[in-house]
Image (tube, rainbow, N blue to C red):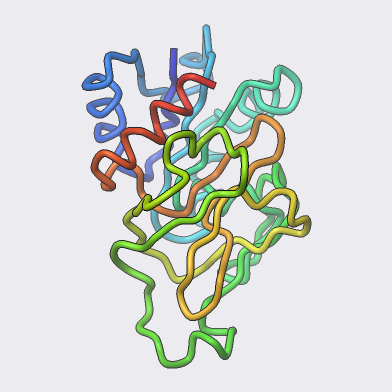
Length: 204
């Protein structure tokens, strides 16, 4: 069963609905007591880095999630800000992230290559997966996903980059560290490409 972490950010129902259409059982988790019989986790999010971490801490799910992900090696997929809080830190805030993927979140505005482009990065963009990335099985060519963000994930190790996109310069739009996965784009808004990616995650 897939548990979708409902800590006050992200369109939880969109993921429940998409998985229902795929014939895959998914439920929302709103507290530590809901995290039973967990096989997969989805950590969505929209908004600001520090606010997301504050809400996750306040939810009572932080410690159970740390155990499930770090000790039990349950696969987790962070989405949008849910991906960004996988990092150690962010230029958007002052607090620490989860640190499940070694890296930091940076602002597009600080990169000269971005200077002539609109903020935020919004709309459809091509995604180029790394060779062998399990999230992108069957999506190796011509995959497009919907983005809405002003910050991007800078991995400390290139081996953690699962896919790249281009917005003035190439940036990591998906990351992986063992059982930890993250995507900057919104699969729940990305039509059949997003459905295929969420199905791939469910089948890991």
